[in-house]
Every structure is written in structure tokens, then in C-alpha cells.
Image (cartoon, rainbow over all chains, first blue to last red; front, side, top):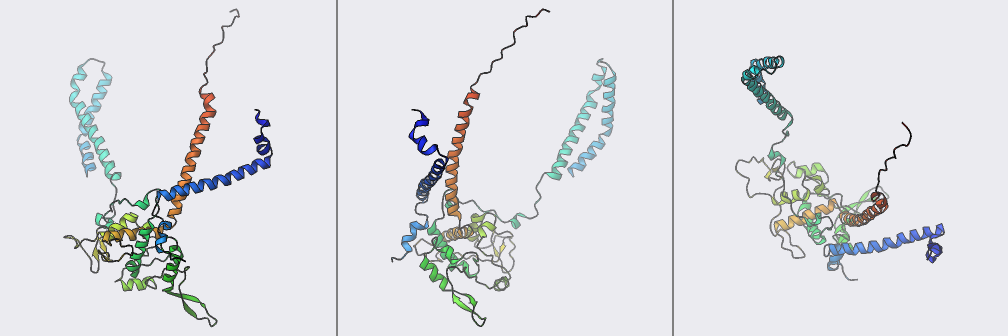
Length: 62
Length: 323
């Protein structure tokens, strides 16, 4: 299959503004994905040490 | 001294050196007859000894002048260097233990705060790290702060709020000195950054008071002996004793436990941004590691052609012209 005739090329890469939009949306999506995964990893490294792990002992129920 | 004796020794060997000079002249003038070589050994040995002495002497003189480090202070004035303790919160990817921070804040409030201020820490910084909002508000309201001037221009007092800073035990440094026999208790906001050794130093200082000063130690009046304090005479007496504080989480309040907790709390006071900083650092390291590996791969991919190319030299054919 020729890449110039594929749907991906025609819909996303051909026009500059769609390609730029793809880059921005990709950055946004990757940031969300990466941040959540890394924060989860961080919380598992520091399990029981952070304030959110001990807050329930001191916060009064509302 | 050594240098001078070495110089003198070379002067004593001056005649021998002259002999060596004569020898070299003779050696240069004479052809390889062998007679000069027989006469040589004494003068040659003396010359070698003199040259060695000069070399050794100049090395010794150079070391004497530039080698050893000059110490302006005696070891006692430097203070004993603290041992390195394996602080978990100083590891690369570890946060503060916030339960320990809470205990440390309790120790600060019940023990340290009677002399030491913590003037750069507001109550709002405690919220969400050490205290809940309600606890922090209740704590702030226990103290009075200056209000804005009222209609008559008089400044009245108001109960504290979250934006206020922790109150200092003394109104100013002079009052602090007056109350403490001339010694100024330092502000503890940045103390772990402000002392060599950081956490290790403060922990060693707090737990390092001997029962009585060692024999021969000079302790000034009103001072206490602590080997870790530069000069060994510290105005602060030992304050942490087993069971001094009742921890709300029922951790046994030994001296070292309290010292460890309060040191971690003081480290938090100096670096409240540490948790976020390390988390961001971890993200940056992971991301840049991947990007670096990618760039290495791209470089190798692009250079593969160049690296695997074989260059052969094809010599020009001999010309078929007539000579």
C-alpha cells in the first residue's frame, strides 16, 4: 500500500493544521498518561510515608 | 629546616662538585683511552650523591612550602565530624515520612520552641503535610498577632490565622541573648542547610552530650560540653531525655527517636518542596533516559551506512605514455 494514499496520511499528516493539532493532542494525551503512571509509581515507592497515607487518622469525618 | 640543611650540605660538597666538573672536562677531552674511567668512580659517586641530595632537598623544601594543608583551627575548634546516618528521606526517590514529621513537629513545639524560633514557616505550610486544616487553624488561633490599624490608628491584637508565621519565643535577638546568658539560639527554619553535616550534625549534636565532660576538657562557665559543637562549649544544655514527650501515635519516645524525628522535621522546614522536587526529578530522569536511548539508536541507525562502508584504494594504472 502506498503511504501517500493511506487514510492516515490524508486525514492527519497532509494538512499542516491537522498535523499540528495531532502534535498538540498527542502531547496532551501523553502528559496525562505519563503523569498518572509516574505518580502511581511514586506512591508505590513511598507507600505509607506521604500525608495522604496517614491523613485518615487525623481528619475528622464531615 | 630540612631544606636549609640540604642547602648547607650541597655547599659542603662544593669541592667535590668542582672535582666532578674537572672530571667531565677530562672525559670530554680524552678519547676512549680508559685511563679517565679508572680515575672516575670517587668523583662520580660524590657528584651523584650531591645531585641526589639537591633533588631530595628541593622536593622536601617544595613540600614544606606547598604540601601540607594549613589549619587555622585546632580539631577541638573544628568540632567532631558527625557519623553518616542512613536517613531514608535523603534517598533519591524517597519523600519525608510524614508521620515522623508530625512527631518532630510535636517535639519542636514542646521542647525546642521555648528558645528557638521557626520564623520562616507559616501555619499554612503545615496544612496537608503535618496537620489537617482544622488542627492548623486551632493552633494558629492560640496565638495573637498584630491586626491592621483601626479607625483611630491603634494596632489591636487578633487571633492568628493560617497565613501567619509561627510565633518566635523572643521579640528580638537582644531579648533572646539576655534570656540565655548571652547566647543567641539560632532560628531553626533553615538550620539543616546552614550547618555542615546537615541532618547528621544536628542529630549528633542533640544526642552527643556526654554525662560529664572528659578529663582535661576546658568548659567555660555557663557552657556545656559537646564534642560535635565547634569549640566544644555550647550554651544549650542537653534537652532530650527518654520519655520527655508523649507521642500521640505511641511511638516510644527515646532520646534518639525524638532527635531523629525533630531532625527530619527541621529538614522539612528547610526544604518543604523536597517531596515535589524529587517526584519531578524522577519523571525527568525517566523521560530523559528514554529520549537518550532513542537518540543513541537514531544515531547508530543513521550512521550504519557510513560505519559499514568499505573504502578501497584503487591505484591508478601505469600510464601508457612513452618515456
